[in-house]
Image 1 (tube, rainbow, N blue to C red):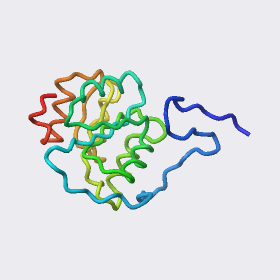
Image 2 (spheres, rainbow, N blue to C red):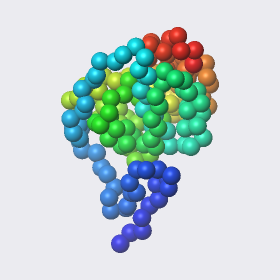
Image 3 (cartoon, helix red, strand yellow):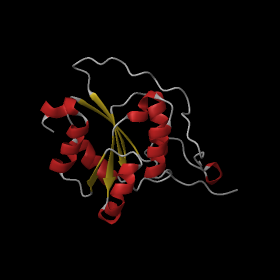
Image 4 (cartoon, rainbow, N blue to C red):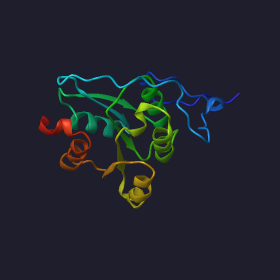
Length: 172
């Protein structure tokens, strides 16, 4: 029997074992019915889901988006994004292109081609300098906007506000 692979011991996600590696189907379908979008009050926070494998970048994003009008949920990979979108409603997804376990393009395809209310959720991609050349291909796969690492407050927050106009006066 293969030895278990460690997946960030701090995570409350289940541990991954070699024999349990997940392979996405060729034709994505939602795993269970997504919750319907609820009518939001003016004082409800904008819900943002972030998939970022690097702990330092997770902290940077948490600091950049720390605001009372933002509720932030962070995960480490695209598969967790799909699982959470099926269970909760979010207003924006931020994906690192170097996400493990489920690559960016596959996660984007799952979101865009699902038969659920969240199939049109805005997606902000985080690219590294090495992957910058892929921006056009990723935009055509369903990404709405992108930004580069290292993250700068002006560029990153500007893109978030562009995708979430309700945060215009939040002064991120």
